[in-house]
Amino acid sequence: MIKLRGFILILFVLVIHGGAQASILLDRVVAVVNKEVITWSDLYRAMEFEASDEMKALKDEEKRKIFKENEGIFLESLIDVKLQLQAAKKLGIDAAIEEVNEAIEGIKKKYSLDEAALIESLRKEGFTLEGYKKKLAEQITLSKVVSQQVRSKIVVSENEIKKYIEENKDAIGDGEGYRVKQIFFKRPDNSADRKATEDKANTVLQRVKAGEDFSSLAKEYSDDPAGKAGGDLGFIKKVHMAREFIDVISRMNVGDVSQPFWTDRGLHIVKLEEKSGSRNIDELKEDARNKLLEKHFSEKYKNWVRGLREKAYIEIRL
Image (cartoon, rainbow, N blue to C red):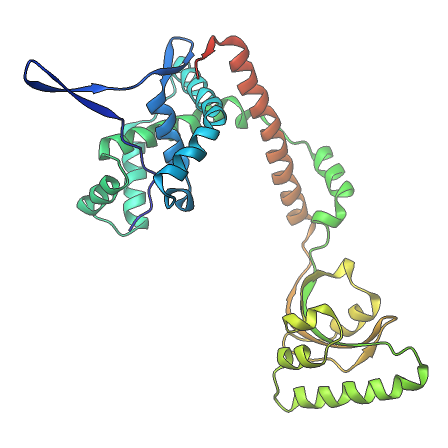
């Protein structure tokens, strides 16, 4: 079953007048944005649309309580959307029917649905096909106006990239690293016990070479907390490794198990699970450029929306 966002049903009350039943919409305006209104039903449809699957699984009473507590936050978000759609309209930006149909075809292809199956899935989520197309059109329009008014105006200079790389070497620097498992033997307090620790490590190593599972032996013998997880230390960048580890691991191939070796902490046997090569300067620059683009976008987008709000007439009636 395709998981599409759903709209809640607008509440109706049946009244009898002159022997005939009539449906009267119970709704109210919760905000005015320039010359357009946002109704209570708009607000709750938006909250239902954004609700996670976990939220939708809650009992109606629990869900409505959470919605009630977050009305203000969602309303502010709806106001921002309304302002952006109004800006798009002024600029002549909208979603072509071909773009909407292409998006629909993409959904059908992704979930292996034909037209009838899509309509049925939408119905179960509270959508009509036309209603869902309208929502898609809004999303496409928002993407286009934000791209034109914000993203297209962001420029990242080479000097910015160079400075970012220099200031964030640990974050985006040399990507060379290794995923390793280890069996660790704590350094004995008495140097006389050093030989006994080495003998124990060699015995364990022989069991590994004989085909016993490395992770199981780590759980049984390793003296560090990672032993409980089968000795898995995760992925470690080379720049963060002790010299003793680098000297040993750099000579290993994936799947190899090392001879026991000492560090100031104790005696180690490591298994190399995976290795990742270092990135060249072009890859580093591209990574830095993307991070800077997103940083600038976040700042400029907030400023753009703030500007739309400052020029708008907004009345909240919650």
